[in-house]
Length: 235
Image 1 (cartoon, one colour):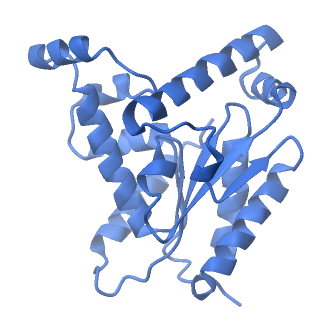
Image 2 (spheres, one colour):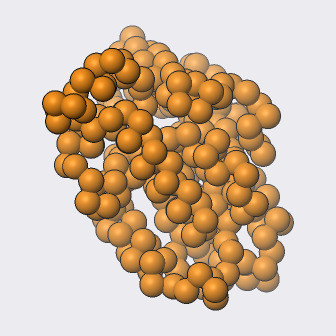
């Protein structure tokens, strides 16, 4: 579960970035993480945040983590309808049902959600000093020179164990959770961005967290980012 203050950090980040001048803003890296369900993206991201923040220049402008829940809250702060969050899932809707519901005012258009989400992810990516998990971010910011695309994978055994520990589920329930999440995520990426999450060419790095600890995984990503953007880090 996310810390209670996670969104407060996101709000502070957005407020700080919105007050900086585009002309004087230094370009910092952004890291997008695609993950298999249960591969430990949250744990890796937290370790990575610590490494980045401890060694970055301009520490008063902190590195910030965004996942689908936090981006959903950002959408609401952009003065979009409150019921956006209720439909903010990595899944595909019926296009006919979607059009009818929009006309009736029941819920926002699927494509409106995707468009706004994409817009926000691009803004966060351009700002830099962000770790963005999911929401197609590895595709959305693929052409931005300051962005790194990372894929986290793991054996099904270790993913089941991780989900059991995090959510206190039985083994069958954990497997059911993983299967559902994986299906939804792949469908979301294929439906909206015409990409396959398992395509290795989408990523700078693919890391196996059943072979590496979460800390080791974070250190590998950190070292890559630091090597590519040495000017952004302390010596």
